[in-house]
Length: 228
Image (cartoon, rainbow, N blue to C red; front, side, top):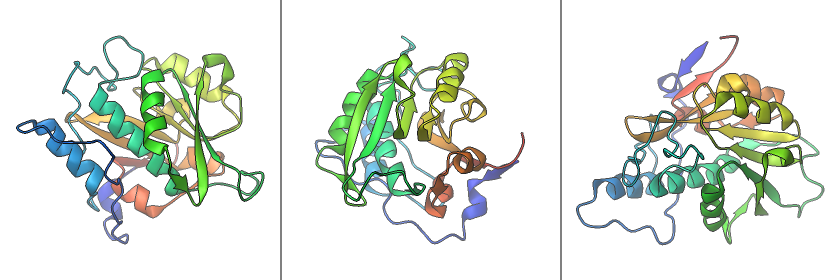
């Protein structure tokens, strides 16, 4: 079953979901930057006015750049990096997810080195629930390491599904391929009307011991629950 985000319209209106990102400026007359500035400044309760992602390279299918490395355009990378950081603030991790009160939140990125670099810049000097944030760039053979969030870049659902299954120690798994939720991810980015949106699987979140805030569900494109 799919729950449309409108079903959550009675949930308390979320505060600004994406803060302004340092260095993000809108060139005069560039519509894409207008939308991007709006995205990172404020988030509406019913839907995301996400940034168009056609500013530089053509975007195909799942939003990946034509070279298929899952990196997308520079603008798309900024939006996705901001989302990945903010997802952490709307996720409750299971007991034992951290060694102690000072342990960092660890994010892993595989198959999207440019996005990893953007994410590193995004989280620099920031915390999640008073914990520092660490970004690790991983190879396909390294996804088994314990992670609080794993982003699997790339459009190939077979490869993505294999990596998600191997990443048993990862908790909040995010993908960007077609049918990403069916491959086992908790959150899957989609490009809808040239804007970055995301779907959520409550079953995958429960399976991984993650509790997602109703604020996050309010602004998701679709929330999936039950057998498809």
